[in-house]
Image (cartoon, rainbow, N blue to C red; front, side, top):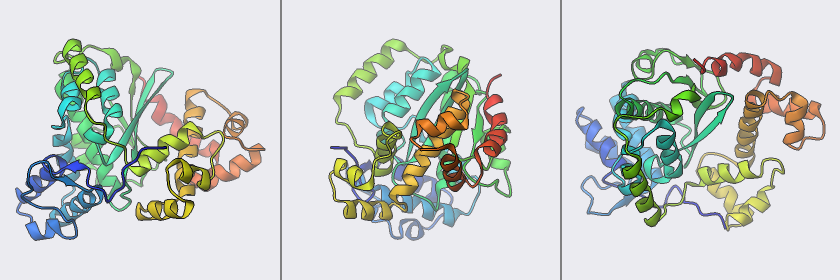
Length: 343
């Protein structure tokens, strides 16, 4: 049975990210009542108190609305990593290379970045760290992405001693003002993509970092393996599940059974997360198609066969439904983003 954590189940230590958001917002004179509205969060929690992801997402939404400042998500991101969650945070601090740091981040995302799930892909001299929802947050998704990308950029600059040449793709239209993006992320920005990703020349992955220690990182990793595991959020677990089975496209009923619930219950869970099963499957298929286009230079026929379509015309129609664009047009539009990641 697939392990997962519901958005309404208390799982995030109150003294970590929830406390960070409260401290930051209150330091800018935000009303405590406005921040805590509809969150069920105690502003002065007892030790070991845990907060539900839904409550934390509501707290973030309240903070973004109350502060009404475009820098809020970026400033929170500056403080997000390495965090204070035991051995995984220690392993992140001691990471000897970018590859090691990203490996830790992806392996222990449920503890280090509980609201978004990072995944790392490498191909043909390019490394891509892309982000998918863990608990569903369509209303503040852009801010969450900005926050997490900024966190990785800031962590790498601290551990590596220099600002790395990341490039950024966003699954959103360009905002009216991009000044904060330039300040915290740089100028290599591309909007209207169909994924939220950070791209970099893969040669940066294994350059030694001056602050890192392979020995200390190894000890921290062994300690982390011995600590209780925190299941991923429902959407993060479903993404991984569908990615492993993308060639056979499992039906809702099969997925529900593997997640230990009935199809009707699974539908209700997904609805509470602001999504539905077909949307999650289409997202995974879109991402896999994009990786095949760029990582393997596959054509429409090859991608169509890989994803189990009976004919390429059906694939083209489906791809346009997923993305709003035919494959050839989207490949042309995104080619510069991937090619530009290689120095």
